Amino acid sequence: MRTILFLALLLVSSLHAADGLQLEGERWTYREGDREMTGILVKPEGTGPFPAVLISHGRGGSAGSFGMQKAREMVSWGFICIAPDYTHAGPAMGGKGKGPAVKGAAPAGDLGASAENLRRAKTCLDLLEKMPEVDPKRLAAYGQSMGGFVTIGLAATEPERLKAAAITGSGVSPREGFPAPAVSAVATIRTPFLILHGDADPVVRPDQSAAFAEALKAAGVEHERILYPGEGHPIDQSKREDVFTAVRDWFAKFGVK
Image (cartoon, rainbow, N blue to C red; front, side):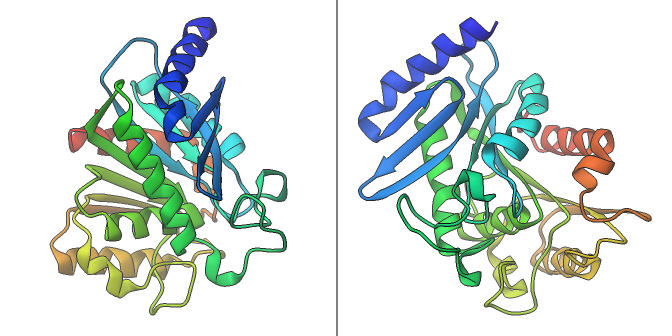
């Protein structure tokens, strides 16, 4: 099975090498001018076309850790899974810089749904849409914590590209200038959102996801918010099976799967 997967990824690599995408097994590097991105790509066996999901990690995570953990499950649903390393990745995965050779800690304004991270997320969608194995009309996104900020920001700036989205331990901020998108940005979202949150989360407050849900309601966007009593921030781990089931069913409900 792994041999088939490796050969399939090599095929994708040959198709897109001219576009700056280089694959080595399940890891990829994408270069565009003086910018560089890294991440992982996992696909089911077969030629598709498959639905695809963009997986966005939280602060201190990475494509290779958080992204791969989620991809191992989601690929079993029949999804091609792509996950990039964002500026808020752990130090071992480039989290101390915002570009290919940028040194020093990423400033606060370059975390979460920053312009740089949204560029990386959009680039992932562009790469997926160019792959013959992907059905470009069935793209979804999932993010945890700061990765959820990216997911919300992506849906706000690319309102026609995602069929469904899900976030865990995430939400919005009352105004601009924070890693989380401002609540005012929600007005442009058209993507149905599943919002999962622990009601004892000390990192991203539950009222941040409540504000997001209220803004989606005001915008007429279909959504569902589920609170887990007594749960803290990493509900993607503490409620792993519940979260996977809810996300899978949400994607199926809106025709991604």
